[in-house]
Image 1: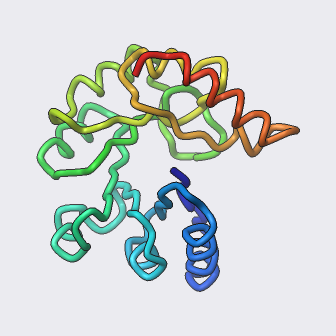
Image 2: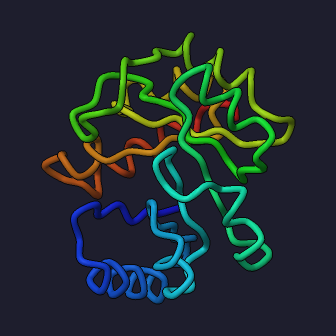
Length: 175
């Protein structure tokens, strides 16, 4: 999956980018925070935080199969999210990150595993925050079905090689 996360982008620019990605990529595209843009671009879904419109209020207004994911960073958020029907949880930050100033304290694999244990049955969990090729396997071993990365790929001298290395690292891990 690819998530469009362009917090300060003008809505028309975010929409244009999302449409281009949806048309060009063979993988699902999600939009961070903006369900309206995701719907207009015919994206696969949207990722929501706790400051966004509530998932339970949005669910009746999106088509069947439209993914709605939710950020979880604490036991309190896991408790609040339990019955909301998110299609997946994004749990983190797993490790220290500079890509999100308000990410909170790093959970580490143990803290991540504790929050995974609070999810509803059948809800996939993705690890996020400070994920690299060196630590991704520990998060998958702690219960993640996958990981989300920014810096490990976009901050690399060779982003394509970094993405391939991360993919190969995770490909050898049990899910």
